[in-house]
Length: 312
Image (cartoon, rainbow, N blue to C red; front, side, top):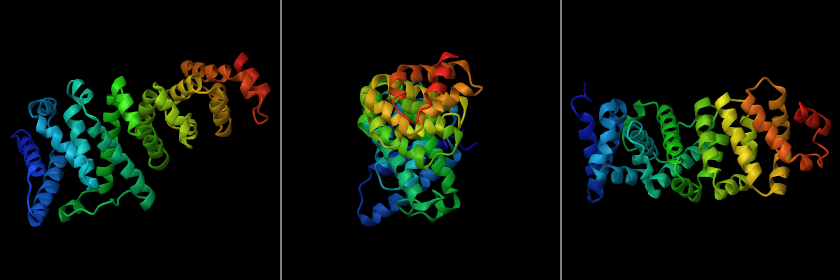
């Protein structure tokens, strides 16, 4: 009912007003509290689907203001803002996400970096934030749930944005590959999160710099390998796509050695031995076949088994 009466629009416009007001220190504290509460309320009531797709197009200042919040210190406000951005773009025409600037992506990637840092500081919970909130009301919300929603929304935005080659280049330049790998290593454990992370990485690895970043990260190939046969068929497909792209388009010696060291060869053999879909088996077989002459040089590789699996 509140949404039907346009409360969500009033809150969004008030948020824009808060980010544009300049006050003395005491006034800034008051504005900060109002901003905190407005974002919290908007998160609770949401934005109706029939209105979400038009709001950003109607007022350019909305995206500018939300971008400013993404670059502020308040961790939970960033989560609220990213969820709001996803709500405003999820049912809109795709060109809205396509025209997101580098500053929006920088803010989203920065939020994911904060999540990883927060998780590492507070294991096994990510309930703590990097900056304490000035609003006592906020403690009534489940902060873990807010963060979880923020992570999912951030990944969904990045997945859609990475459909365009220009955005892929921007994301790679902003360090998205490294942050996504760190997120998967530190935070994941949920099927949806892993599927989204692998989906984005599979697209970013379509460009040379993305593949280079994947190889440069000490845990990149290892975590992708670990997720094969561990999460879901969709995750398997995306993980094998990453391994296939990297193995085909990167320096062979570096790829081969890395894949042997982290157990990729063994995992690919497991794919061929297990009851998997034909497309997954074909991807695994293609990777193994492409580098067969190199694999057999390593004493830890079971060459007779590998030969048998490739000939079957």
